[in-house]
Image 1 (cartoon, helix red, strand yellow):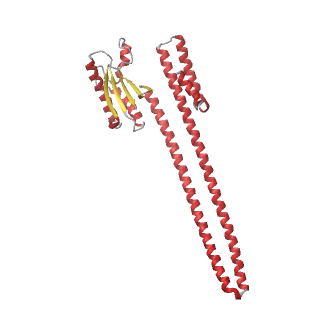
Image 2 (image 1 turned 90 degrees about the vertical axis):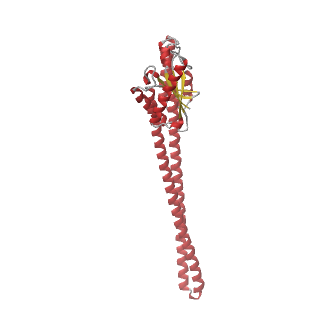
Image 3 (image 1 turned 120 degrees about the vertical axis):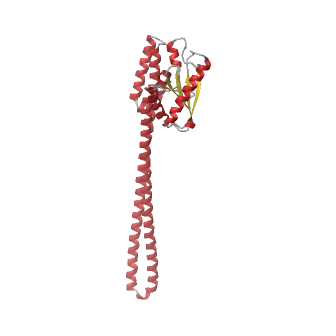
Length: 309
């Protein structure tokens, strides 16, 4: 929890989301107080875990705020570029229009001279023809430039719309994942480990003692898990691990844990999680997280872990 808070202090959260950093500091202070009162107690462990997660959440909010600031800066740059291109196009069109006006004046002078100098009619006619051709080309060039400017403006507007849609979609996805994570933490323990994100569910919530059939209440909990899993990277693999306490024979515990892991996998697949992404394994009593000598320790060991890696 201390390391997580130190990292949060060095992250963008310090400047961009100081309120979240303050919440992290307050959570760490509560854990420190529990440590001073009764080091090693369950209260200390719980408050330390909460303080760590709040610090990590503060870092995440800081990174989100930094990303939003970056998006806003990119929007400003895009608008500035669009304005500059429009100004350039307008100036070029104005210059071309001025040249066109000048050529029209020259053409008028040529026509007046032709009226005055009948003996130079042929030469003047050729000159007029040449000037008219130049005028037509310039007018065509002007129309082409206008079309190109309009096309660039449309492309920039379309790109801006796409950026806005992407921004809205990203924000909606971030909110959806945050809401699902909050819902998930109400019924499970979630933590990041070297092997990936680990979602731990209490076995007694999912199964009756010694059974592999899911309890009715388990469907709500696993329904939340399935929705969360479907929002994750589809390239990530998912492992369902079943664990038991040490009561009973090792072989029976392995079979029981495998049956429970399979039941959870089948339910998640039925709720839309792609079958090829998810596998199940029964660990039995081989990987306890607490001492099997106490009822509380055995209860902690009876669990199902879902690893996203």
